Length: 84
View 1: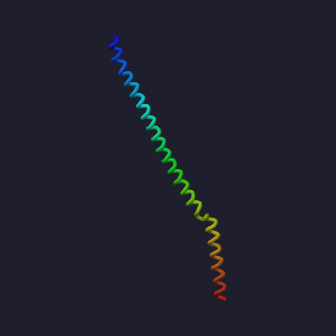
View 2: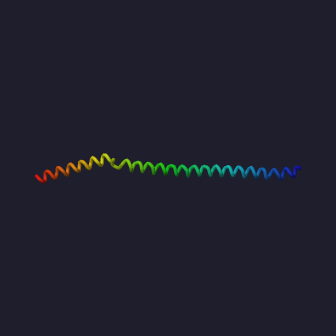
View 3: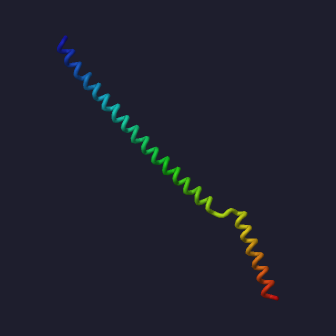
């Protein structure tokens, strides 16, 4: 009986050690996966922020219309003064 217990006890210890190593590697895998997901999320946020800045830096349609009306008024005034 002792012989059986001695042979079965060792594989149980090995199994426990293997399970522990598997847990450690799965924890490492989870950490690596989380880090990769964080990098992807941060890259997307950075890209979105850059796109938002680019959009915000463009003139609005109202501003473009205002500039066009100023340009048209200047052109009319220049035509009137040059024809006088």
